[in-house]
Amino acid sequence: MIPVILSGGSGSRLWPLSRKQFPKQFLALTGEHTLFQQTLERLVFDGMEEPIVVCNKDHRFIVNEQLSALRLDTQAIVLEPFGRNTAPAVAITAMLLLSEGRDELMLVLPADHVIDDQKALQRALALATVAAERGEMVLFGVPATKPETGYGYIKSTNDALLPEGVSRVSHFVEKPDEKRAAEFVEAGNYFWNSGMFLFRASRFLEELKRHEPDIYDTCMLALERSKRDGDNIDIDEATFACCPDNSIDYAVMEKTQRACVVPLTAGWNDVGCWSSLWDVQEKDHNGNVSKGDVVIQDSRNCMIHGNGKLVSVIGLDNIVVVETKDAMMIAHKDKVQGVKQMVNTLNEQGRSETQNHCEVYRPWGSYDSVDMGGRFQVKHISVKPGASLSLQMHHHRAEHWIVVSGTAEVTCDENVFLLCENQSTYIPIASVHRLRNPGKIALEIIEVQSGSYLGEDDIERFEDIYGRSKSAEIGVQTKTIAR
Image (cartoon, rainbow, N blue to C red; front, top):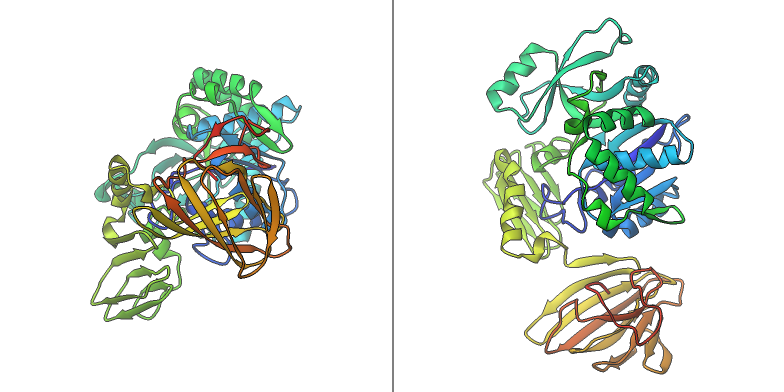
């Protein structure tokens, strides 16, 4: 059995903590490790192979870093240039396996769910395996125990041809209103759609080719034109752009005659909104969940998330307050499904707060915006041991670097020199420069930018060890929006 971990998402439903460039699966929301890391950890047991991860190309360095932190490997990382929903992601992975002469069972699961009971998960997998080995397409359904309006539902029916404990899918129901959801719970044969599946690779492709030939053909061509670099499969962007956007449910599971449901009673939660996150967190005696520097007075059933500033609340009931360095969101817990619409509104206004946090992660480390004005910007830059920024130049700004800790190797035009703690240097406008950490501890510097334009797109990159630039020699100009 091969786990296929789908690590996509737009980072909208748990905004402002989750952002497009750093969505919720990469956040430690329910413990020491991130949701992505928890997904990886629960799949380490006998009979389970190393996973294949499907993620956005922009997230590949985050994925690699979080894998390395757990000392886990993958069979492959499929890099999508942009999201096209779950059906194309799984199709390309299945085609990749068959191209290597393999046709294992594929366990498809999102990277951002919470599952509390590991043994219950393994029992459900064992039952699902029996069905999938017979050619069935298994969907893991969570018994509907309350009228949730944020989930899709599956109605099941008995089928004597299926293994005991497995039922046939009768039909799917999109997110119902509260009245219908209550009727589903009362009926007893409805499940929440977990978005987790088990089927053989060839079986999925057979059904996909029958029901959605455009997706099948486009994915086949996109994989043929893709590039492989070690474990990374870089999907061809031009071809993938032509692929229809569709989910596994719509493309295959709602159309096939072989869809079946295995019950999953393992403490599942998709952490799909702030109220879902409140559900799975430890609460105080008044039902409040708090994180960070938070003081709560006369409040009940609230979720208060601080991220640096002191957050104090008085007299609140069923309210969510989330504070980050550059944004604050306050919502009634019953209205948190509206956060996604708020993010859409902010995107229409061109607000950058939906894209990145003040701290932006790069393959070499991170940078955090400390302060800015009309002609200046101050950043805290952290460079990992052995890492290096690209060799680059700015046309509109100069930079002053002050080493706070660690050792910096600085390239400025023809000069290469070292700076130690409390030393500084000046990078003039149009100077070709690079910052590298030659040491064994993190390099921390304060960078003060000054000039007429301070945008991240004022970078001409010449060399980059992370493959983010096509140019390899000084003199070839490559514009980019990233350091």
